[in-house]
Amino acid sequence: MTLYGIQDAPPPVLLSYALAREFGLACLPRIARTRRGKPYFPDHPHIHFNWSHSGGYVLCALSAGPVGADIERIRPRRADLPAHALTEPERREYFSLGGDWPAFYTLWTRREAWCKYTGEGLRARWGQTPPETGLHYGSYAGEDWRASVCGEEAAPETILWVDKGDLG
Image 1 (cartoon, rainbow, N blue to C red):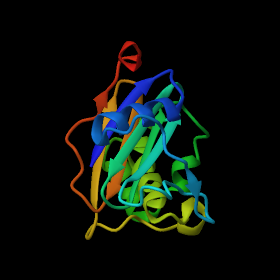
Image 2: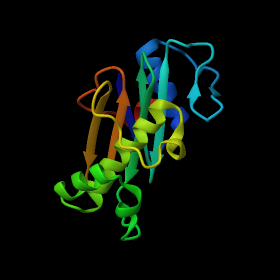
Image 3: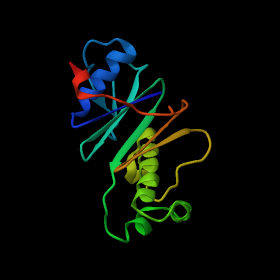
């Protein structure tokens, strides 16, 4: 599994760059969506990907198996959001992490990445805590963002941040 990130570029631009680097593909393959909306490459079934964008940040995950990725810019929301959005085990972890917005987004991106991994989406998994076993998770943090990845391969230690000047 590999993670690429960039600021202020459209997700397909980052995906094209990552595919060229990882698989030598000269152009972005045709993208289709499952009935629940998960994107995939029908002409390259061995390449799994997922992307996310928030507040100018873009994250793209490539993997040999199903993968989900999420990035969120940290911003205050309704004060009751953590109580409403997190499950009981997640709320306990939220408070153990400090009970602030960075803690919330750390847990939220993990849930989103898992939901995207399953291909079922958030609505189908609302109120469920991501399983602790059987999958690999990675959590990543910047000054004003949090990100997570979920998949069947080991999560990378870091995100490969791309400079827009490298896009050609």
